[in-house]
Amino acid sequence: MPIPANIIANADDLGFSESVNNAILMCFEEGYINSTSLMTDTPDFEATVELIHQNPVIKNIGIHVDLAQFRPLTDFKENFLDADGNWDVYKTNKVLLSLSTPAKTAFSREINAQIERAISKKVNIVHLDSHLHLHTLPAFYKLFLASAKKYKLKLRLAQTFNEGSYLKFYYRKYINNLIKKSGLNYADGFETVSRFLEYKSHQQKSKVEIMLHPDLDSSGALTDHFDDSTMSDWLVFLKGQ
Image 1 (spheres, rainbow, N blue to C red):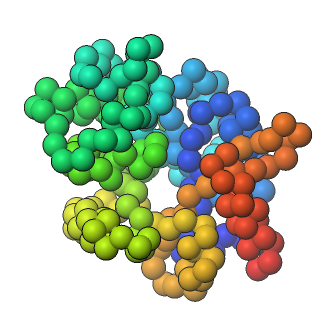
Image 2: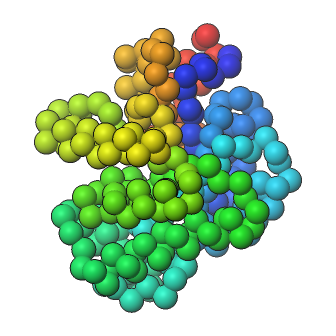
Image 3: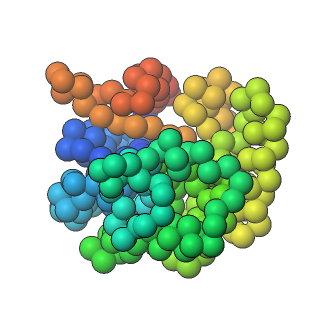
């Protein structure tokens, strides 16, 4: 049942909630994952840091930068927040081409603050990605590349397969080439579990990252809070090896 040697099975959203944290810890203990990404702007951050330090099985930790849901760590003044001061994903997810110079500065400060909060708690950080993949948007990817270089972190690629849109496919290929040329890529490819299973990526020689969102349902059973079939399909694959 071991994870194939060329696969990074990453659990996103560590720190999102107590149930997510417990599910991710369970997945590490059972050998279902070998990497995770930590959110540092959530109410559960301090408890999550304690969980990490008490459980060395939680390893290969990255920063899951949030520009989509919770409250910024910095004194963010740009118009990307809702009425309660939380990120407004309907605004940040619509940034297609460019940002003003003040907005670029503000977002860079926030990205770096989220990274530094983990470092200040002596969490060993090795990679970088983002909540809802906002780091792959045209206005943001250069900011994330700069932060990855600054803190010597590996960066998640955009999805490396064609989902039916050649425009998206070639755009993602372009930014992935930039990441790879910088030597910052966390893997050679990034896929969903369904794509991984369909194309038998574990049989390749290249390193592939797949993404999971472990959580526990109301009965305490392991699920995926983004798509329950993702977790069940992944476990069937692991147990069938």
